[in-house]
View 1 (cartoon, rainbow, N blue to C red):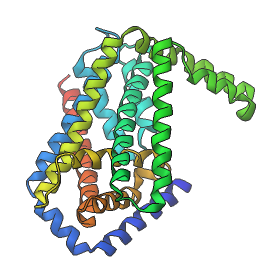
View 2: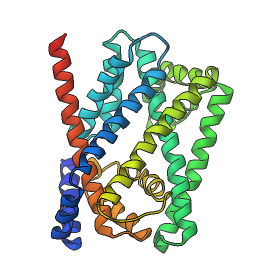
View 3: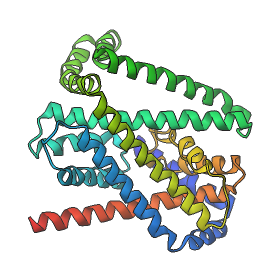
Length: 319
């Protein structure tokens, strides 16, 4: 019930935002994007394929083919977009699908956790750099200064913890879970720690013992994020607007925190659009362009998710 109320509230906020900006203006901007929408969809599909490559390289060698991992990634994308559940259902489901293809549970869930961790690490680096740049430019509202500083500090702490685990080979998650037993209950914490321990051992072992592969996956994830920044450039140029070379990366980085801060809102409806409008306005672009960008991303995600389901159904039929 709470989730449904949050979804309704977010959708209401989105409608109010569109009305305040001007429904006619948004409709005109969506029309002006035209055929560029195909490029945006192709870029996002490439982003999904790149993340599938990152997941594939996060698994032990020769366990499974890239094509099978791509199918798993497409399934996860469809679930994440169509259920508005974010990673909470999609990521565990990827692990389960990998186990159905012969990967051990520890390797499957460890690989999924590693890929998501490295994706998140790169996201936080981009977010911290982009928000720090906006803060230095003095274009953010005063009320956002403290939250931005908090995000930057949290990113530094997160990065330090990551590198401690990678260098020492000692996991941090299981000890933290066990210490939470004083709050959540000792038995419950111990059961959670037992389930997490084999996954964390796979994850930490990969980071500690395979630095070259770790760097490779980092590079793949960075390439996936770059595709999303190019997506912003394509949409802004299709709208006939101009922006500096670094601005697509600043905008993409600045939006990375949306899923974390507003995780409790299904699909981040309303919150995502409001943040996009604010950030586009902060760098001198029309707020309507930011709202349009957010809507385009919702539509292309649905298109790619639908295409993923069609591809999966076709390949399953072929087999």
